[in-house]
Length: 163
Image 1: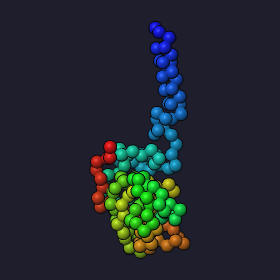
Image 2: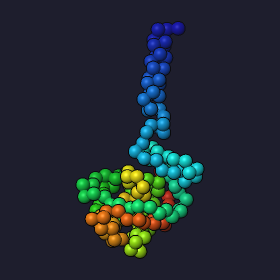
Image 3: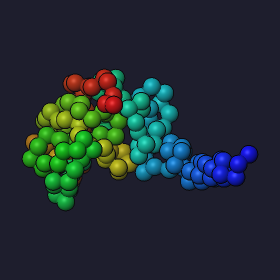
Image 4: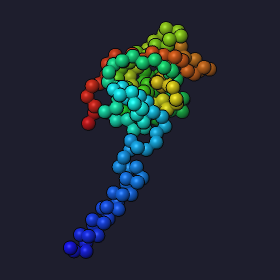
């Protein structure tokens, strides 16, 4: 066997072993910031590694805590590529597909607003949605408390994952 061919095989093997050892070849095995239940199996899915196969497209209502984006995120690019607009109806969800339209209702005040999921997060335990500051204010989440119990009811959920 020629020396170059043997060298290439060894090099490819070493690169593969290094990639697997560092987790580059198995992203689901790496630790994430938080874990969320898979809608189909109720097993935890690591949030940082969600792909279109692990997103909840069921349209089921979920209840949990909502918070809102800090002012420092104004204008920063969200997961869908658009800038975060503090006065917009944008929101972040760990489990709903990007582009989902949902109704968010503050369970304490009864006030609600329609949002579009454009980002991933929140990355704080026990929170299910981050809202733009304007949306948070509209449903009665005050800046002092910063968090409220909400119901998130999907209205329109994209069923086909983007390619």
